[in-house]
Length: 181
Image (cartoon, rainbow, N blue to C red; front, top):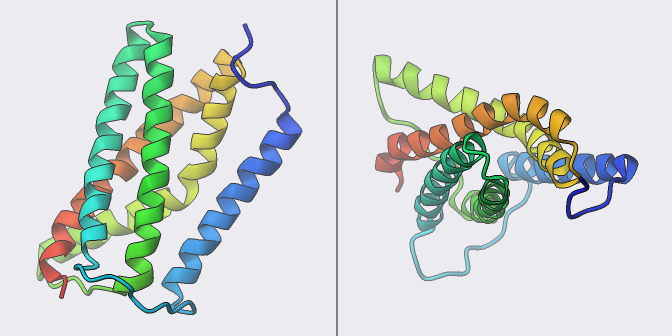
């Protein structure tokens, strides 16, 4: 059974890699401090970070609900939950870019063992966040075109990594937010 979109692996691969590279490049550009834009709003720029944590929490909940739905063979609900998680992730990305564009870096102030825990969580979060996007997109594509076996094989790796990135995003926020100025 075909999904809602037509299969075209060549175009899909190009689009998925292009989107992934552009987003990765935008994030690297922000972190390199090359791009500087004046902050145009009258509210605390760190509200973006709080919003990001809320959205990451929502994505984690949606991922768990999608897993439960597919385990119960409710494919339509699973698809809707995953697509909602992808839309939320896009909202997160826009907010993340806004936050990093205007807030700059915040130094973590914890000391002792908690500092090492924070940096372990942060580094694994960053590395996995950098590589997960094409996996999410390929997994969704395989599901949408009805290639269920390939979709399931990818999802076995994509789901736990995406869930980890979502949850650790919230943890990083909770650990760093006391040091926002």
